[in-house]
Length: 243
Image (cartoon, rainbow, N blue to C red):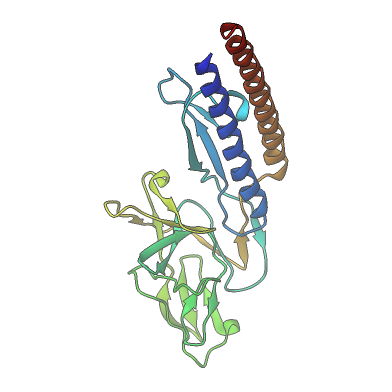
């Protein structure tokens, strides 16, 4: 009977985590380059292949959060510094503690002439250095080729770095669209085509998230009813043994 209480409590915790993850996904559904998160559920006695993003069998094992790295839809913007990777890989930027990786290619030029993300992080070239734009140049004078070559008034100032990992699941989420690689993992430089004047949207499908949310709510309610039933049975047993 106590095992039933633990199982019900675990199921409620799992459903609560699922709800939090889905809420986060929906809140960022319109953020360029956002990657949805999901809950991997390892069922008892399984070999490791749990459910992914499906609340129907949760509550039977340990829940783990994972990132879905499937690509999002490409959207035309017409803005020259909006970039999208037309294949695998990530852009790289200089974070506070080292390089970070992102699929969000909405870039800008800061007052110092550095190509940066919307968070103000410098974009790295194919050698790992920031890309500097002459201070006298405007965004309209910057052209970026399919090969990532950054040209200003016909002069090359760098090549947008593109990097890939044999297993992107080793990356750790750092904020909304940024990821960090473990210290012992080195990315490979790749030549994925760069699309200009476009953005890659998030890979969140709101309808799918809403279905999962409803499923999780039902799971939570079922586990709650189970706990109430077990609690009632325990009280009745204690009362009988006390007579």
